[in-house]
Image 1 (tube, one colour):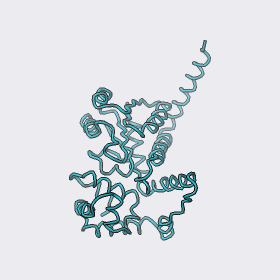
Image 2 (tube, rainbow, N blue to C red):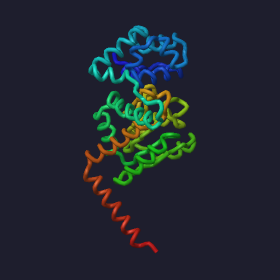
Image 3 (cartoon, helix red, strand yellow):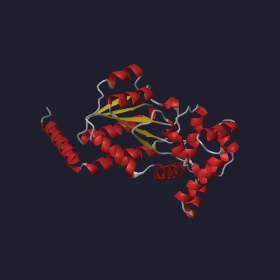
Image 4 (cartoon, rainbow, N blue to C red):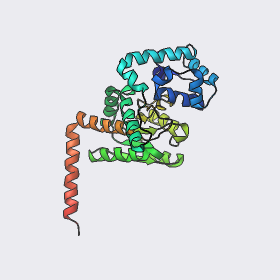
Length: 285
């Protein structure tokens, strides 16, 4: 059983400590595969018994069983040169720029370990069929939401942003959501970083027949309820850095896939936008 699959299939209660541990494992499964329960517990600032309980909770034969699963995944996913490269830390600590570049490069490389084009295609097809697209998030999701919304509008999609809203305002903003619509929710790193009303919103979307997409980091598989499509990417240093390079790439991949799946719509939207720009410019007073 794969670790990520075990997390996604788990229907019991996950504590805050569980979520931190899951984020660390998904962020760098190869590193955890060579750690002891105590070492992982120290990284998460929890007791080692919490690590063992989580492994059992997810259906593994204790922490050794969880590590065996991670070892098997590593052997399947990486050739020897990949495994060696991932163990080496060549960051030049004398250069902040160098460290940042290497960190973000690793974050982009990690996308291939946790996300497939098939999942991007599934999300894109939901958006193609949507009458309206609701984008919801808070905090560091703001640049991603604004960027993706601009892409969508330029290509003729109807998009509605709900950014940093409290529960009452969010409820009012999505009151018109129906079965022909789609929801894109951004969720990162910890329960406290979720936008207000996350669970209620996902349940509401499901109840009215709207399709839901969640764009997240390695925290994504722990979220409940599950969306129709989860686009979750981890990073090996997720506990230390909070840049959204991975999710930004996911947004771009989603936009590019939309263009490939519906080129006529994208071209028409771009042409209409340019005509409007020219008309507005020529009529300036």
